[in-house]
Image (cartoon, rainbow, N blue to C red; front, side, top):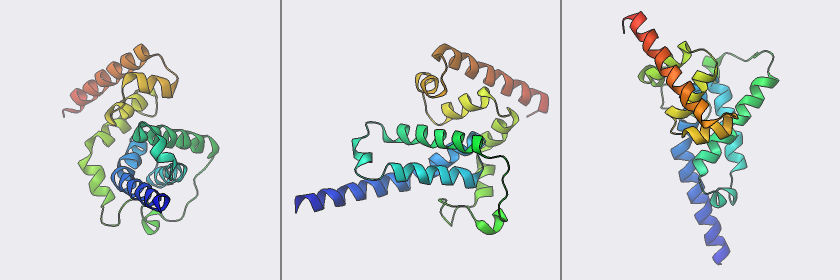
Length: 170
């Protein structure tokens, strides 16, 4: 009888984690330049990997999911040569609640526009990880960099963004 209630508690905990963190994880991958569709797929695969009882064994479940989703997105980007898809407008946005207006979400998150102006390099990656709450040590471990290099890259990204803002009069 106890095993059934433990399993129910694990499922309830997983459901709560899923609801609270899916939008943030998808947004994190989008900040890194991944399309909404691919980001949602990578997050879905990550959360399948975290199904109970795995989630309960993780000390920092969000950080684990962020790293796993990021790795899945990197693997996907390396495998993709082209992205033939059906009309994305008709397909909708998987894993994003039907009531969420993606265009409004993007317009309310000005950082997406600024991150896009950085291009697809390390500055964008480091800034996206920082924006999501990762520390330089966590970023360094995940991206295979020295923590001092992460801090330097972050500083340079901020300088680049300031320069872009000054140049654009914003």
